[in-house]
Length: 527
Image 1 (tube, rainbow, N blue to C red):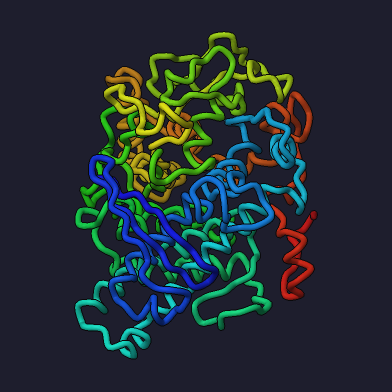
Image 2 (image 1 turned 30 degrees about the vertical axis):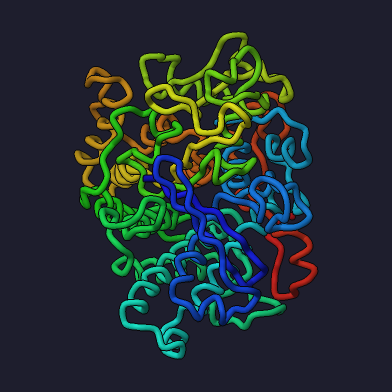
């Protein structure tokens, strides 16, 4: 069963509808109340509906599907979708992908020459804080004091407390993205009054501590992954996000926490709730909600959760040249995204690796022109067909896809542990075993297993396993390769052959409008 979230949002007061589908049949529960927070939150049955809005903030962009009444005004609605802007900021400035479009902001990301006015930088920033605002409102209205005041039963309070902990996870996830992408940022919680005010600035180190404290507090309070509805945050999701936080602690806080990262990876792995999918490709197909590997997805549906962002963007933007859209379960090609040669080289042109999914017909590996789709191998990693070859639910009429985005999956936990082991903070034999588990899946046998690992070996394995999954910028920064001239790729620094860039680009700038309106904020250095 796949749950697909639809919603209505009305400013900071949220009234949501949730639709649950089985075999793609939809049951809509329309909100029964008007614009009154107490009317919405006064009925315990409404809390699951409002929680649905929080989850859908990661996938949807407005009140009417892909276009109309957007959550964030002043931006192209599709361009502001959470996963789409995250992809652009995490992937385009790296060695994995280039985009050939000339939409404002895209060339600057390709060339690592962005400013505080970059539309995608602003889109990510405002999407993060819109999501945090929604979570804060829900957490405030679901407090123990509020539920006591409203006379809820013990059973209702227990259920709503679980929802509140899920909202805290979602807020921590968005604050993690703020920490990783922007560093020192405005800070608001449920304790702040509703209305216009100037939030204080929190430093990157302080925000790290806050996220850690929140995740540790809810880790044992969230439901187990085996008892929770697909698409919702389990205890394993909180443990995985803690592992991510600790993996990059030296960047965020100046102190390495690799041993803690390994501990939380082991919690996820040893839970037994997840297994590697037998087929790597099926992780990115229209029925990937059935995969045993996905720990936390962002849910999409071609009929009921439509957006021009997310995996709809990832599929259609990857198709161009001589590619046939129907082969990938859609009816059009946007001719934007291609792989850089650095990623291709990670495979040593080994088509035996199941993760080698490049389309080369009519394509050159070399890229000397950003705008030419035929320069750079195409990479149709995301495919709007089921593992059995059936097209997605909406492939006959539009480009909207059914593929869920696997934001957290077991393979990443394996690789995080392996990196910690390679850095001397975990068992090396176990780390090697985890890497070889991924290689055995990729090759179908043990012939290509490794006999040892080091940190750079794991980084290359992360590229082969996790390319185009919004991890690469963070990985390169952790390895001191993102801005360095020692490792370059096409158009890094605006040069066709690539060059080193200024180190301040490891952080994105805060939008100028927020700096002007809030004297508590300080622009990141270099901007």
